[in-house]
Amino acid sequence: MRLGPDDLRHESEDYYVGHTLDAVLNALLAQVRLALSFSRSDEQAATPGDDEAINLKAVALVRQFASVLPTIRSRLDSDVLAAYHGDPSARSVDEVLLCFPGVNAIIHHRLAHYFYQVGVPLLARIIAEKAHGETGIDIHPGAQIDDGFFIDHGTGVVIGETAVIGKRVRLYQAVTLGAKRFVTEESGILQKGQPRHPIIEDDVVIYAGATLLGRITIGKGSSIGGNVWLTRSVKPGSNIRQANIQSDSQEFGSGI
Image 1: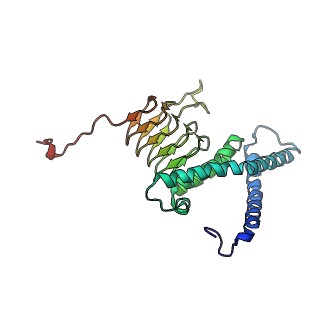
Image 2: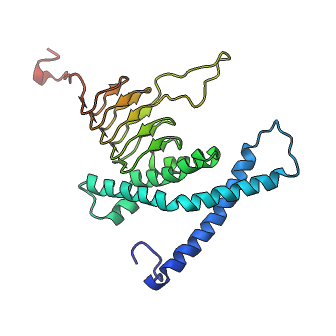
Image 3: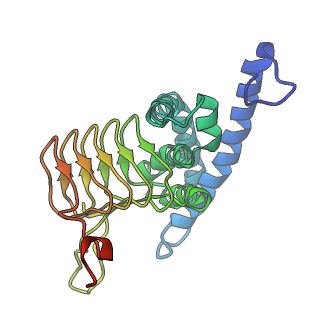
């Protein structure tokens, strides 16, 4: 079989998947327990029932995770196909799965985002940072990313916590979807969880080095050119480019 152990046969495929999934979910259960224990407030005195409550919650979350795996798999299928169809250098889906850093990053993100949503942020962040370290792509687990997402090349991409990305969006290397400013409380501490990152609608392409900041909306079907710095919303179907390109070479009269 492709991409599997040498001794794996079609007739034992279901057993192999079931056995592997069982082992992974049990290992995951232990990590969820640890993360839930860590997030328990230090200000609350531990009670004899705390450990049991944490265990029951961990079991419920892992069971729920197992139940949504088919949905996550379906989304990942759309991401892999987006990479395969969107990159002329891709020769096969297998190559995309094994070699493309953007696909590695979105696989990790789809898993991390689940745990972020259900209230296990530490585990979510660990998963996200694992991908960050391997790929150079920094996606906060809170970012909402729809189907068919593709990051080409990928190095240096940053996607913030409250970013919202629609269907069939493509990013290139060194793109930043960041915050423009941070709201502070009276004490000077930054407010948490405020919407502060861009909304990217369906079918948008953002080219290398573009920086998009603040809670702006990039309209459906827009194209954002390389190295653009953008802090305002743009209408659907927009083509945003640098205002001009200057040259200081003597060939064009400069430097005389």
